[in-house]
Image 1: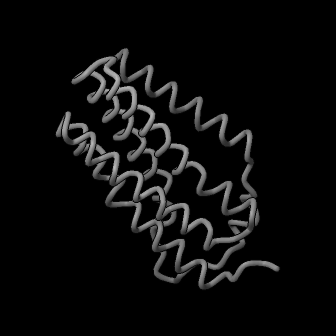
Image 2: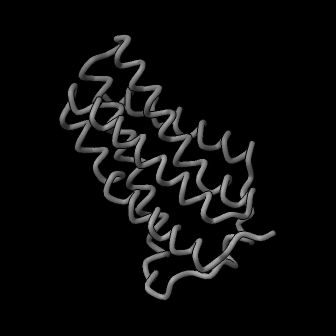
Image 3: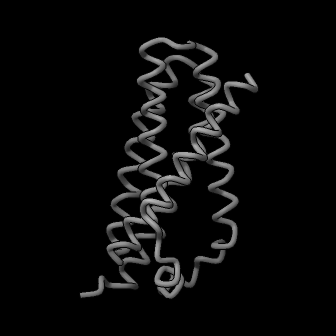
Length: 157
């Protein structure tokens, strides 16, 4: 299990690192955006995402252990990869186009992909499915925050 978890973690890290190098984000622009007054938990968001990624990696490891190297498991591993790309695309897409509403759309697409993946994973391993629930709970919150920020920060023309 440790080797499976480590291999999936390394693949996730390398994929995330590559995506961030290919599409660097304009964090200065993002940090200048207006935020809703009730967004008091922004400092916790990186820790929330770290926890969600650890749960996702662990979910993939449990799924792999439950049904190693089958065609269906490989397809679901691709699903985990696609979900990771959707999650990590949020910031570079939003900052590259300087459009917060586009970030909200990417967030909503990620939620839908996560919901589909969870329903498929749950059929093989309920534990792996439960480990995807933190993402399903947080994603709508993050998407809603982004949507509110989009109203506060109209696109630049």
